[in-house]
Amino acid sequence: MRILMAGAGATGGYFGARLAQAGQDVTFLVRERRYQQLQASGLVLQTPQGTETLKPQLAQASSLTGHYDLIIVTVKSFALDQVMEDIAPAVGPETLIMPILNGLRHIATLQKRFGEDRVIGGLCKINATLGDNGEVIQMTPLHQLYYGALDGNNDARLQRVDAALRDCQVDTQFSDNIMDELWEKWLLLSTLGAVCCLARGNTQQILTSRGGEALLQGVFSEILSVITAEGYQTRPAATARILELLSDPATPMTSSMYRDLTQGFDIEADQVIGDLLLRAKRHSLATPLLNAVDVNLQVYLQQR
Image (cartoon, rainbow, N blue to C red; front, side, top):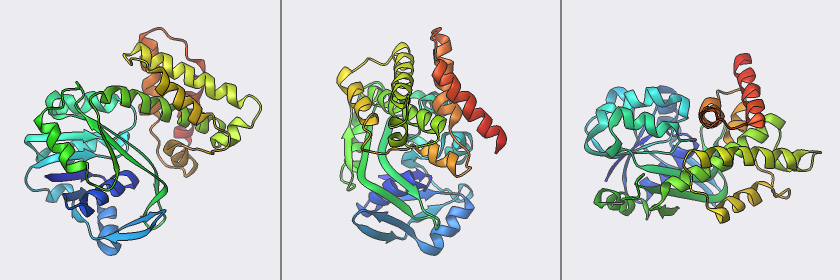
């Protein structure tokens, strides 16, 4: 299977590297700066098991040739419009596009551009970041990849995707209910991002502060009410596990949005929090805590 990995940051770099190591034909679509960096030093993975370096196949938008069987989109959501332009020449009659982005707005955006039948569901669970020299740093052993048809019909095209991905040295889940997985991932990451960005700290610091547990539970409840109104078929055991994970004061957690914010980078405020508020408004739901988070993030973006 010919695979185009759109992005070689922490997510794209890690999972793309594992696919390449498993023998898949993987090309990384990157910008000039990342292209030069990877050309010079290779794609470096720092994992709990050690350091690995591989020489990746690289392409820039101007040099893309031929169609790909699978395009995995791993950029930040605010870069999606440009990436759609970049990957367009690589989309052929049989191409499937699997976005691994935060939130859900990107699915409709990709479907509008490339067609509903081309876009499949995907998400990952990994604690990873880029180091100062562009190395991919996997901070914990967690490395899960979920995928499946958005309508649950995992036909022959999806079976081919599964055959390519399931042996790539990561934990894979070929899901026949990927939409619920996507809703639950959004519940986790948006709660985590909201409380960390608002309180400017990790979950351990928040939970051991006066009112911190109530803040986390309040944000969680608001987000759960929004996604349920939007179509999430609540799975009580799953949502309970998410809240339990977030509420453990022994395990300090932060979100990628919080890490980006503390470094002065652009953040996915509209895609992770703003979109929830738009959906809440559609159902006349009161979300005062989410509104406070959104104002906080908008002020940050104005001050950048």
